[in-house]
Structure formats: C-alpha cells, structure tokens
Length: 175
Image (cartoon, rainbow, N blue to C red; front, top):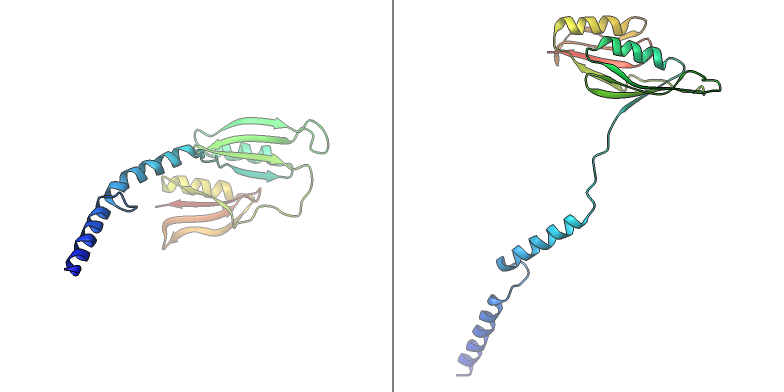
C-alpha cells in the first residue's frame, strides 16, 4: 500500500512538471524567439562599408587616371583636387574616377617612398570579346611589361596579366 501511495505522488509530481513551461519546451519556444528578436533589434545595425581601390603615385596620378579613363567606355573623372603648395604643388591631392562602374581613388604622394605597386595586387577585368581583350592588352602593356602573355590557358580561352607603364597590374580574361 505504501508503494502505491509513493507511485501516485510521483505520478502527480510528474504530471505537474509537464504542464509547466520548462526551458526548451514547445510552449517556451515562442517567447524565447520573441526575446531574441527584441535583443537583435536593439543592437545597432552596421552598414557595410564602401570599398574603393586607392592608387598612390609619385607625380603621375593625373596621367594614369586619364589613361585609364580613356580605355573604358562610360569611364569618367569624378573629382580632382590638387596639392595647393609644397613639393607636390599642382599635383593630385585626391582624385576619384570610375571604370566600368567601379570607383577608384588616386593620389600623388609629396614624399618619396621605398615602395611601389606589386603584381600581387591587380585589377581583374572580364572582357566581353576577343577584340576587347586584345585592345586592352596592347594598350596596357605599352611601356610596361607582360607578366603572362596573351594566350589560352586551362582556366581561360584568352588571358593575360600585364603591368602598365605606371606599375599597376591588370589581369585580363575572356571566355
């Protein structure tokens, strides 16, 4: 009889536990989701930063910018500010230009520095035609150097990697 009383009390206790909203239960899921949503909406939403390629030259920024703008349709110079005085007087203090819808910035450093552009960072251009890649390859390599000759490669029907006369590297691809 004692065993039966213990079993009944245990059954009542267990039944009572099932009716409570224990963490992890189905009844608890909706309030937890709502609390999480309130917590997330209270956090400041970070806006993705704008990324712009920045090219630093030593006196050739305007010439390079105008050269690049001449190579791409719908390319244009957006802003051009010049150094007002000092060793870089009248050189580019800050300029922005657009090539194929992408914004670039350039600048003429008034101080000489021990570095320049490296082929490890390049501007990658996907050309729409064989004629277009041939034209860009010819113009961009004039006065510069060819890193990989214009040819067919396992990864592309037509590809070249050049460093232009200003030292900026370009990878050109046509498939």
